[in-house]
Image (cartoon, rainbow, N blue to C red):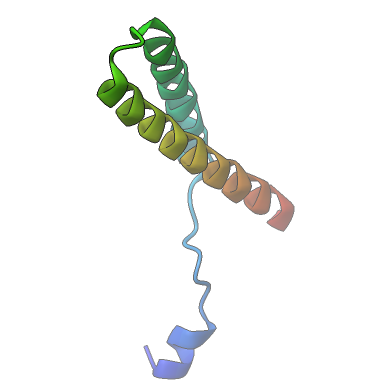
Length: 77
């Protein structure tokens, strides 16, 4: 592959729609679990609360990314 070919190719890899759906489903389950854990934590568990909030935020960002990829994939068809 020449340098020009590499520059012309898409920077976004093609992802199978089934894989996107599985990732979205998995992240939704993880978000539900983390939300439940946060809800059930004692007020004194500050360190765990911060950790779970960080994980929850990360999962939400990943979910948005996958949903955008799915939307972009649908628009290309």
